[in-house]
Length: 300
Image 1: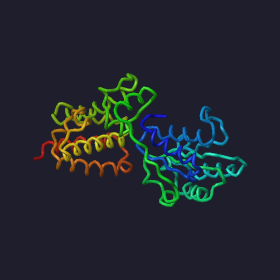
Image 2: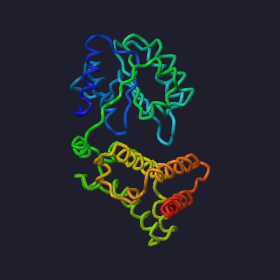
Image 3: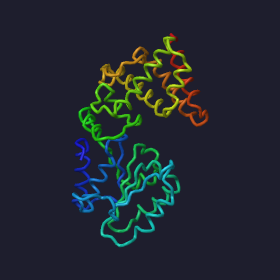
């Protein structure tokens, strides 16, 4: 078990030991910090398989988005419900990324977590708990996962084969200078490159079309989220009058912007993000972002 999740693991273990495990537990926290690993570890404990793999165990059922789908559908829930009443002393149903449950799947799940078969427990992981319907939230126990510190992250990265720009907590504590695993550096270098290119454009040393084309292949929503997250952390350092490690380690042109400009950029980026699906053209969106930064830099 990851060191930063030990308290979470111990808490659930105590519930199991005292026969107080709720019908449904929602495990929430930042992306890629080990929520799924936590669920698997406590499931092994609950099912009495601490030293055994859960793979192919009929009493451990996983529900996740199918390939090519953006949502967990009602048929996936029904498939589980069709077999959930088969005789078993203990069973765990693990729902990954519960915020992806569509409304019909959510309603079907709601019916079963209210009165599940004896011994059946549900675990739901999510990084967007606000997207889970209130009726499921009200019938579940919520466990907020602890976050890793910087040393934890360095160790954790060595075990990951892939990391993406959605891992905001990692981004807030680390940049490419601290990544020890060379195979992961490329994933983080995009952050520094993006800010660097925008900075050059502001200084009129880079063509806006070149910037737009260079980054258009990336997930635009992720790039916007990275900028928003950076702004929030820079504002935090300013408001608290103490420089965070994130602020000290990430040198980019946003440090030259005062709080009012950062607020203005933040609001505009949120609006751009809301219209991503309407615009549906990455280069156009990036063009707008470049213009936003350039105009803001020139304003008094």
